[in-house]
Amino acid sequence: MNVIIGSDHAGYQMKEKVIAHLLKLGIEVEDVGTHDEESVDYTDFGRQVASKVSDASFDRGILMCGTGLGMSMVANRFPRVRAALANDLFSAIMSRRHNDSNILVMGGRLIGDTLAMQLVDTWLDTPFEGGRHQRRLEKMDAE
Ligand code: RB5
Image 1 (cartoon, helix red, strand yellow):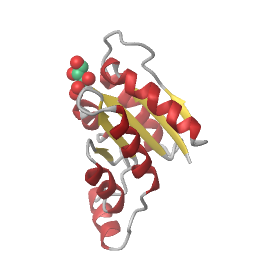
Image 2 (cartoon, rainbow, N blue to C red; image 1 turned 90 degrees about the vertical axis):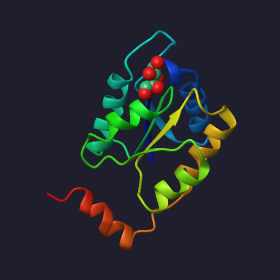
Image 3 (cartoon, rainbow, N blue to C red; image 1 turned 180 degrees about the vertical axis):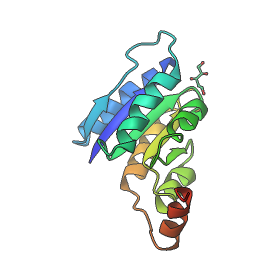
Image 4 (cartoon, helix red, strand yellow; image 1 turned 180 degrees about the horizontal axis):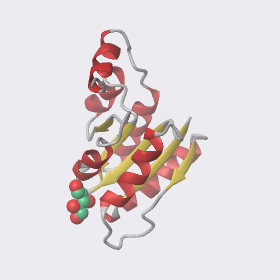
């Protein structure tokens, strides 16, 4: 599995820790930035990550901003992207089981690092259940 990751300034500190965590797990990670805490537009980084998941260059994406709201709004404008804002474990699990989420979004100003790493681990490990949920996903892209 390969993962593309991005954040704005409000998610930067968390992003750095998530990258270190993923590398420790042996997961290939592409970091689109941002690379410091200077104020930037979350839109620019959300678009880069979402476009690469949308065109299947990457299996999964992870995005962080202050709340996770802006990033999830941006990411979900891209075809085939199912970005899940999950600042709690139940949402992270269900976003995989029922929604086959391919981008995890977290709020750097809302949750601590320990929870963030648990969310990442859980989200990476939880399979999609398919079946009736697959039918519902197909309806998302219906004309
Ligand atoms: C930046 O101040 C903040 O607006 C951004 O990180 C994010 O929370 C937007 O949704």
